[in-house]
Image (tube, rainbow, N blue to C red):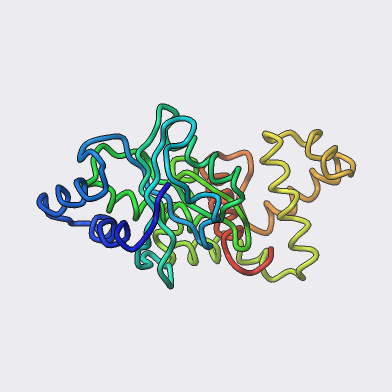
Length: 246
């Protein structure tokens, strides 16, 4: 893993996107990277840990080049960015490596096939970062968060969705609102099992049932109708990603 002024100067134009073929060739030579290969981009929301910046490849053969890129897609400032020449395990191993080092929050792009594509990969990694909960240390791959990525990509629609689906819920006192949101989240995590949700929440199954029925009345949406359940899940994602507590 490497970083420095020289690397940043060569990576910057690639990460900005739209690099010419001549510029890609120059950067590849300067960085010692193949123009075509299996690449991913990582964007961190906090400074990169010192332990993440070291010479030589990872255990799986991945090689990292750290630089910085100007913020975009809702990011207010520049971010720590790495171009990763992937090993056999792909982006999943890159994400695991950062978690092991205590980095985060961070987003990891899908795999791309050439240096010329790292600009697009950087934008996707930035979108993945935006799906991390405020204050969290998550490292997430975009492919794990596609629905949430769609929401953060269109904030005006996300705001509208939250108001349309959870409007009446948001007028409740915070403690009451949090209780209903927690019950819905737990029920979803338990695969729609009221019994398992009750055990996790430490209450009677009828209590869970009654809370869910109340949430259905407030939102005018049924948990048993797939399309309406999608509305509720997406609104829950918007609420999770907002800076305000549920």
